[in-house]
Length: 423
Image 1 (cartoon, rainbow, N blue to C red):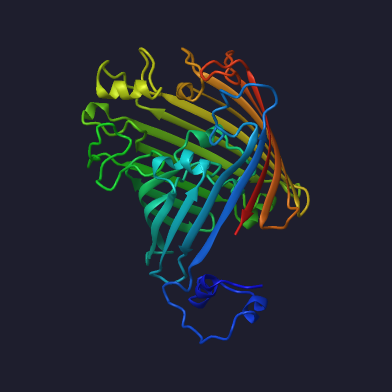
Image 2: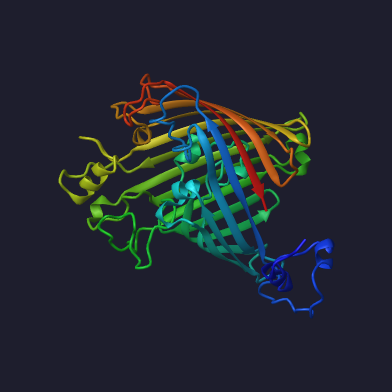
C-alpha cells in the first residue's frame, strides 16, 4: 500500500497517526519533532448519504421538517462534514480550538448563505473553582433533543422541534460544571438566527437595509442539565435539561427603524430516562418559540421584504409562535441492532410559513417515525432504514400535488435508507 507525501507529512507533525503496519511501509526518514501547537490536533468528520422513496405521485409540497425538501424519490448526498480541533487538556489555564466545515444540501439549509463554515471558536479555561470554560466565536445551538449531525440522533429525519430551532450562534459561551450532576451553560450572542448573522463589514446579511447590529440588542442563551447519580439505581445517567433563549431572533431582526426589531423567546425542556429494561431508554422534549408580533405598515421596506419572501400575508403579523412535543423510544436489542421510535405533534402560527397553504387558523401536524439501525459494516458505518408518516391535523391538505402551493394530500409517507461513514 502506497501513501502519499501529504499523509506522511501529517503523521510527521503529529496531525494523524499511523498503524504499525503502515509505519513499516514508509521509507526511513529523519525523526521529526512534533509541532507543539499541532501535536494534539485531531481531524474528524463524516459523509452522510441517503436514498428516499415517497409512495404515490406528486412531490411539489413535501413535509416541511428540516432537510426534507428536494430529497423525494431519489438518491442524496446529505452532508460532508470535516472538523479540525484541539480540545482542552486538564491544565488550569487550558486553550484549544475548533474549525468545522460542512458541505451539501443539509449545510445550505442549516447554515444559510455562509456555509460551509459551521463552527469556528476558541476554547479557553479559566482557573475558577472546578474550571470555567469559554467558547468565543461561532458554536452549535444549545437547545433541543436532536442535533444537526444525523449520526448522533436516533432517527435520520429531523423532528419539528429541531426544525424551529436555530442551529448556530456567534458570541461567547461560558460553561461551569458544578459536579457530576449539574452542568450550566450561559452565553451572549449577536442573535438567535441560524448561521452567521453579520458579514465582514459588520452588518446583518439577512437585513435588506444592511444596517449595523445594535449595541443594546444581544441575545441570551442558556441550558441547565441535571444528571441522575449512581445512587439512583437503574435511573443513574438519566438527564433533565432546560433552556431559555431570548433576543433578536429572525431574519428581520435588524432594521433602521428601531420599532421593527423583533425579539424571540425560546424555551426547551428535554429528558432522557433510563429504564430497568436492559437496552431500553425513553426520551421526551418540548420546544416552543414566540416572536414579538408586529404588523408592518404597508409599503415599508420591511413589509415588502416580508411579503416577497412569503413571511407575510395580507393583514397578518410576522410569524408568531410554534410549539412542538416529541416522545422517543430507543431500544438496543444487540450490539449491532437498535430500534428508535419518535412520535411528535407540532402546532403554531409560525408553521403557516413552512407549509404550502396559507390559512387563518394555526397549522397542526402529527408525525410518527420508526428507524432500524444495524451495524453491518462495523462501528465506523451507520446503516439504517427509516419509515415516516406525516399527517395534517388541522383538516387541510398539506402534502403532495404537482404544483407548489397546491397540495392534494393529508398524509405523506417516506421510506428511506441512510448510510454514514465516520472518520
